Image 1 (tube, rainbow, N blue to C red):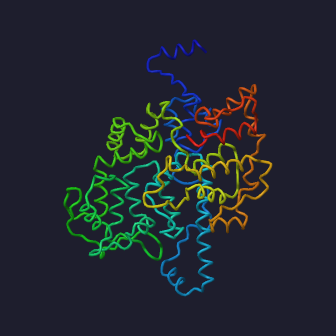
Image 2: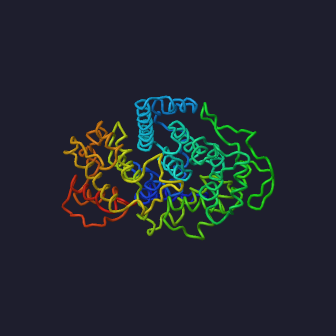
Image 3: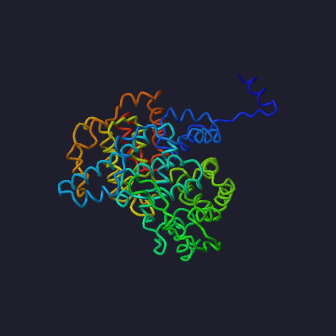
Length: 483
């Protein structure tokens, strides 16, 4: 074998890539997915950093593998909805509201299931990223069908081209409703979408003026939706076709042309790259490296694979100081725990309620800016709730008992009374999971620690602890909240 290796190294054009190792593989897969298993880490450990990233990017999906629940994608025509609200009895209205709540919960559960079982965690990670970038919420949109369609749209473009995604989202009916473009018409422009597309979707604050917003809003007049089908529709009669001045450019711009003006600005590439940096690398981007990667992103005409490859193969991504510096979101924590410990619940609605109670209600970001993330995920209340959730999951013998419903949360209490709590469906099967660790007690403890935690535990772990006691100590250690 040694002679073969020497021969291959001598031959011109032949380069043997050294494997990245377990630590780098775990770091990469943790940041781009939801807690890797030991098997996944071993597979990637044999690859170089570049090979590993290329493999992730080559296997991204554009469609989910989990069938969407029946009826979720059915749009209720708005005239029918209006008539129902006007003519229905009080009991019929209450029943309709309950049905909408249950549909929304089913959509959340479906998405969490897709995150848990997908063969491309990066796809779901990016779909979640765009959900928090191009924000819309069930509370404002109200139609579960429109939110389901938006979720599928974000996934189709998740690792594609940012420019194409921007144009598609601008026409997305859920976005049209959420940012009030549905009422944007000639002579009465609504500025909400124009403002957010500049401040939150492309340029960032400080790179546009109020006049730019007013002029851009005119360009998006007439962009609405068909009230019978829920599809995007352009109403020419409502469109302001006059001249407009946006970002120093003058012309009879329509909405698509304004989006192209935004994409032409260097600030857009830097804004998106910085946001991706904070998602995958560290809370504070390196200014020089950020500008270099952003320039390549813009030169690629906003190819998302280009910017992700540059970020995920950079020395900054693998720097020791940038490990275990990102706080797991509630979705990270819940989905990652289910994946890592091979827990296979059939009903993910309790998990959806769990993420909500921890501060991340999928499909309902707190405002147009989305969840702030980072250290905002952790406070005295949510940290206690996180620890309680983890304790319940790993108290295998106590799982048949019902968990208490969160006090002060009427929806959660109603669902709790109907039996939607983490019971045996979420039971951790200890013996099969522990069987993957071999060797001495010290070796097993070390291997388990490296798998479960992103870095050395913050608290002292007793060397005599094994199996369930050791696992409980690890998941309750503060480092388990980091990635």
